[in-house]
Image (tube, rainbow, N blue to C red; front, side, top):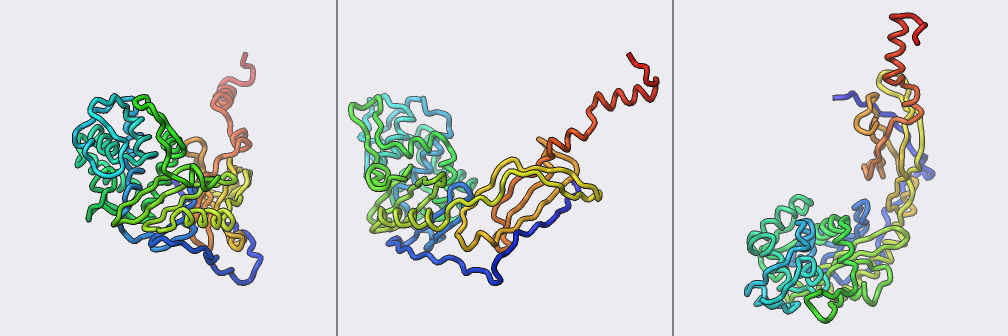
Length: 367
């Protein structure tokens, strides 16, 4: 293991006493809710966010990302009687439909088709039970520790549940996929198997909120209204999840507006070059190759500190360590430290070293 040492640089604190944590003056009707920053995963607001409960059709976010990652979107899907007879919201599949997996994912996300969910599950998992196994494996991999899935559509089951926090984690993961992000943010879509377009049920996207760029609706009598949505403003994307929320559209707009105002992305690190001390009591020139941003309240800006962890021997791509940033002594994000090109130029190349060895052996009169 390479020896690591650190040099500590504390950003100046301009006040003698720390500011209190910012208080949310936003009201939500939801039984459970969360507001999360997409890029960093920072939770900006939460209300009972770890309470497991029924989630209805926002389940389909997990169904969609598994379908997309299967690499089978161009395949045609055989429609079973089981899919056709599924209760609840539907895209009205028929056995004779010639429809691709991609079209089914659009029908799943825009129209919340339970029949589409079953067809997807059977095509990828072999059965609904097989697909549920894939769902739970994926959920565990993402880190959804308080969730369990029995089916691909979200119809009520005692052992089909999740939390606002877990669903935000899932959405953060799914939104990193370009195809999912495009489908989730589509207002209308016409399948080649239909002579009419599907209109997205997410009214935040189609009518109510100009910054909305995706999401999924849900409802059952037992679960109530469930909603996941995303919005982008000034280069920042936020995620809101509400469970059992009578006024979910308004809840989401209120949380988005509050989050964008109170926790904008702020630059905490510029691209830079610096001299750092190593464990061998020499100094090297290191560089940070990108600017770092983090969602911070105004009263948090001056409470950021960082530590550099440095190795003298570069690893892959000339990485020599990390700079870890802290808010109130809690690690919040990090960036890589690289050996500077100025430092590399000081290092003798292979051929220079080889020629020097030849000169020592044969003198300076080399042709």
